[in-house]
Structure formats: C-alpha cells, structure tokens
Length: 136
Image 1 (tube, rainbow, N blue to C red):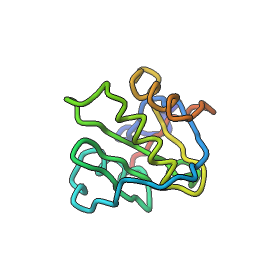
Image 2 (image 1 turned 120 degrees about the vertical axis):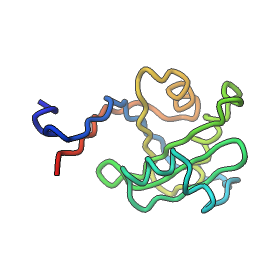
Image 3 (image 1 turned 90 degrees about the vertical axis):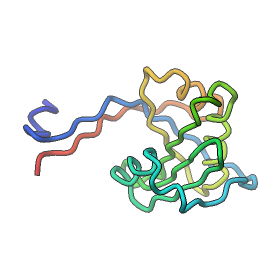
C-alpha cells in the first residue's frame, strides 16, 4: 500500500517507534550551534522537520524541530568513538530540559542503543510511524 501511495519515485522510510517524555524543569547545558548545519543528522532533520534548532558539543549533536503532527521532535547522534558511555541518554534528557512541552523521538525498533537511551531518559513508547514522500 505504501509503495502505491509513494509512487514510482517516492521515498519510504523505516517503521519507527514513537516515544514521548514531558519537559524537565532543569537548566539546559548545551547551547545552540549554527556551525553544525552541515552535519548529516542536521541535514536529515531539516528534510523532515520545520523550525529546526541545533545543539551540541565536540562529542555529539542534538536537533529539535517540529515534526509529526507539529510535535517537538528530538534527533541525536553521538560520535561513534564515544558510544556506550551514556551520552545518548544525556542528549535526550537535554532535549527535555530545552523544551517547555512534550518531546517525541522516533527510533527504529532495531536500534537497541537508541531505544535504551530513550527509555533511560524517561521517554515511553506511545505508537509507531512510517513516513513516506510521494513522487512529485
């Protein structure tokens, strides 16, 4: 069915689980970073979301933007050499600190590390989504 909706030149994304968390009333530590606009995670976020803001440091990048149904969505990436140290969890906690509304994350169910980071940061599953872009 999605193939028919997308058409011959359309794009179909993977099926993602959607997790959500309430904002935290704590001070954020990351600052907005305009120098990360060429980062692949940022470019991808700008294709799928509006009102994108980028945060990060030397180890990681966090992107917040309006996504599914206008909700605030977070996307993140940790430097591969630094994975497994809890930085993903910290980034997702930071997304909650930077927001004054619920924050969504879309995670592939096969991405165990990101799923664990989201759960450890207080996000809980609420559904699933599969994005597609029809042929123009």
